[in-house]
Amino acid sequence: MAKPVRGLRFQPSGGSRAAQIPVGKKQRLTIERLANDGRGIAFLEGRTWFVAGALAGEEVEARVLGAHGKVVEARTERVFSASDLRRPAPCAHAGRCGGCSVQHLPHDEQLALKQRMLAEQLSRVAGVEPEAWAAPLSGPEFGYRRRARVAVRWDAKAKKLEVGFRAAGSQDIVAIDECPVLVQPLQPIMSRLPAMLQRLSKPQALGHVELFSGSAIAVLLRHMAPLSAADLEILQVFCAFHEAQLWLHGEGEPQPVDPDQALGYRLEPWNLQLAYRPGDFVQVNAGVNEAMVAQALEWLAPQADERVLDLFCGLGNFALPLAQNVREVVAVEGVATMVARAAQNAASNNLHNTRFFQADLSQPLSDAEWAREGFSAVLLDPPRDGALEVVRKLASLGAKRLVYVSCNPATLARDTVELVRQGYRLKRAGILDMFPQTAHVEAMALFEAS
Image 1: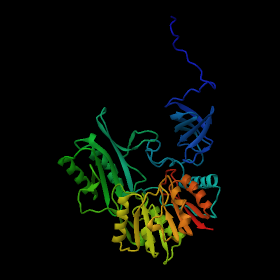
Image 2: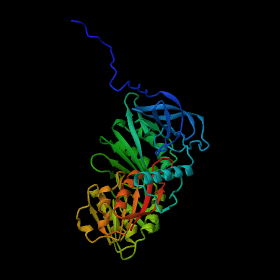
Image 3: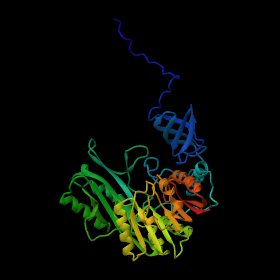
Image 4: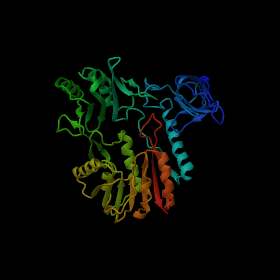
């Protein structure tokens, strides 16, 4: 019997397959324009390249991070011909840390990019433009972030503890000694945190660390094994030095070491204090958050005799300020613990015209008891996947005005199609610069019934 012929490669039907581009390969590219996520776009030999850290019109050397089909993802290694818009990156960790992807672009240009992204989605997906564009809501471009999650990982081979933020395009951890976007009270904690964690006896049992600055400063440590008395003392001394609360997250829910300590944040213009626990959703940019709440109330124009619906209410960030202006607020949230926390926040602020309910808002609105009386106005602040099932029923609630706060222009545009179909007009829209130095876009839109 003849031996089988080995090593032959058969060409698949449809022609030859292009060779894949290896990770790490460097390529000289001319950037044509910016993508919606702030990366530069280049075209070469039938492939589309998305290049982090590049600007339109630049000639750069890019290193391949990954490739699939005709799409190549890369990052800028060297700039041969720089755009007039390029500025020196303010952070020493730029290009390695994955947190701030557009800091090489001046802040006013970042705002313009985000505005274009929102306008493009509304035009392309929904075929609409607001009757009026609102000026961007923005604050300081640095020193704004009041909450941060710090990655911690034990490298068994090198026998060292890695502490920092995730790298761009990988799961590597970039050691961070300072972070320009953190609020000032968290800066000294961030700089001294790695050295303190390295003193703990079981570094391989450490998870992550969360930092929070609100009505108090807090440090939360996730750990997968019980802490020794000596380790607990190291943590307590560290937090006492920084005048911070210590929270631990082992089995179960995060708990403060001192059970009498409370954590939260203020909404100063409304004299409100909202309790918060690590794991709860809270906006990281306090200044823009207050401006966002104020704008939402201005656009919604709540009247003293009205009943208003707040969907995806969280801790009551919008519901409590609304309650100071209307007859009744009905607030709905999917997470039961957040519903309980929001109700407690209303009670502690002496607001008794609020009612809170738990419901799965990814499903169509059923004939819930809270929906039967109808509403004059609705405010919703959904997660990234939007609120399509909810908006399909909004017209049936009788609301004449609707403010939609979005953290994803794509799903806002998709949901706008449905709202327009129900007879709502897009009166006003604008961006919220909740995350300067990133391409992340938040937006607010006002709809009115025709």
